[in-house]
Length: 77
Image (tube, rainbow, N blue to C red; front, side, top):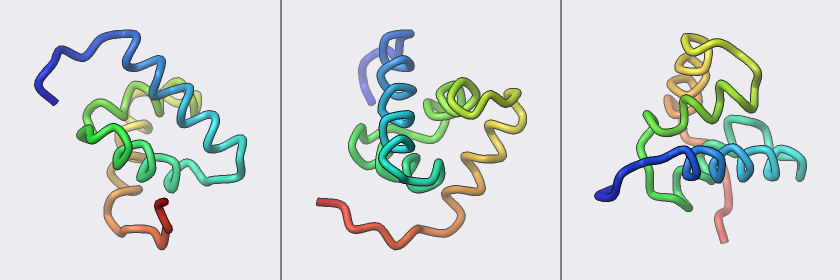
């Protein structure tokens, strides 16, 4: 992503993750969807996971890394 990443971007990602989880997606599946939609790297997902999952920074990083080790069977439309 070429532009600067700001707080409003993080809030947008947090809201999208929460909305997907409210629709029944797991956090891991929601991460894949958001990553594909936004075309962002995993580094930008850590703060959002920290907030949405209510975990510390270290655990948020672990969740993101684990989520992207194996691709899910998602049908993105």
